Image (tube, rainbow, N blue to C red; front, side):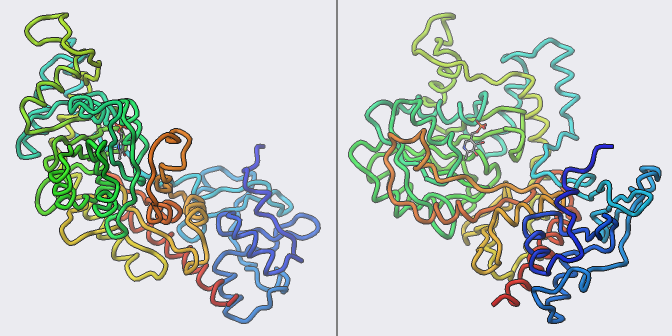
Length: 491
Ligand SMILES: Cc1ncc(COP(=O)(O)O)c(C=O)c1O
């Protein structure tokens, strides 16, 4: 019979000391070790809670496991029906040893094997299949068809106006904007150091040079002050990124752009619905670019959108998206354009998603409220940024962990949550040290470096329930409580 891969790491002898058991628990074995005698028979289990109680009770670090283990444990039987063993798992028993006829652990059944909280899952319960099936039934599956216009119109209406053009991804949306704005070789483009690589890659694709500047410690987004120090005569554009759903402080960036005649391309990949001083992001700069990858606020599988109120720019972007062909003369290329078109199939998904975008945002706000309620005031946790002028849509509820206060690092916390079936995601690395950007220009980015080492995104999805968020909070507080006790005792 195949054994659970974690079983061997869970086993410890009766003679193991409190310190050894704590060390093993700290290595991440699902919050429990199984204590066996010389014959391999299970004699007791030790959980994080048992350790906490032993420490509070004054147990010595060298005390042997048998003095503080729980002898009353729940175990399944190797020859029992699987369903009977499953029935023994509960919120209290998340790690079930399976014993042979002699009482020796031969397998494990864990809660995390059965219950998983993914970081994000797309929500496709509206008109998605109806509209996609309509494309299939009518044969309009490529980049022509009614859903393209309907999706673009619905998107523009939601944004309060402008010309919206859907494209094949958030990355191609950004590249299209740069190309249409004439950014090219010899030009510099200011980009935050703290973002997904696509923001900088497109600058390189355009033949220009990314200039990395730091983010602001309050908003975690492009620092206007840092951007101001990075402007040179070669600077042609700034790409503010509304990271994790929090808007950038746009007014000082707009002022900087006016002063130096720079273009502003908003990277709204993660921020559909976010607002800066009551204005939707994407409508503030020259062009707004959105992503509809499956983990975004709305999805088309892969996909993106550019939006602008500049009619000439919209015409040029539409043409560049379609190979640079003249609208009134087929196969006549005015520019060497791209094929960055979205398919009608994707637009069908996008339209269905736009119909429920407000519902998605409301659900996210409810999840945020639940997370806030449980996590506010925990020393050593910084909650997601929320400037007074910002509507943060919390694409991912992202916190920063202070290991000096909590006694565990961001990655240890992530590991412990994973053991409880909860998927999390570390934030992006700083871009400037990465090989791809060796030729970019980098300004000092201490805030990015700090956040990148400590930031962790918790599950945040359109279909996630408030109860699900509650389970994540429970797991978080249980992990943190245990570590706090370790710390107090070791101090
Ligand atoms: C900040 C940011 N910019 C750009 C992109 C690129 O979007 P896409 O994956 O749709 O190409 C993403 C998405 O992953 C992103 O998070």
